Image (cartoon, rainbow, N blue to C red):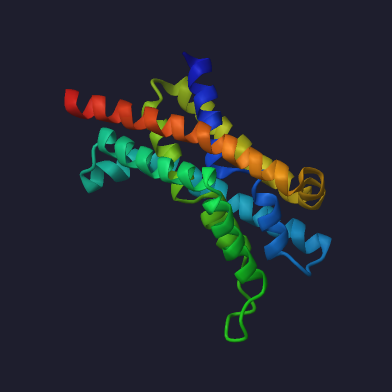
Length: 212
């Protein structure tokens, strides 16, 4: 059971965060900066994202309780959100939207703030700790049956965020190695996987909702 839970958690978070797909985004928003500056941006962005995800991992259920939202209801809504993300991935809409956002921030208009901190936005929020990944950690935390599974989820979450840091440092090499075709195929395959996981979230939430 623990292994199944951790595998499911890793697959869900890996697909929603998509560390490999963030490589070109990181390059786009750090165009023209030195290697030292890029490393600083990478450290800050993953640190902020990790803190945010940990906050929602530990406090997400309490927040739902305060707002009067049941866990099954959030499972259904979160599953639908993840399915929408999967739909965008399969039909290459999500990558285009991310690319447009990154390109806009990498080449700001004359009237925009030149001192915009790209480590916070868009890298930490919403590219790493976005609505999908936040929903995923809350859903996965609500499914943890004991402290061991919750500890495993923490380790998996930090590992995924840590992989983003490694990807950022190797972004230029990864982009050249993979090429556009490989990235396109990988994005679609991960989208199909996320779609299946999101349907399972909705089914489990609906079952618990009607049972309650």
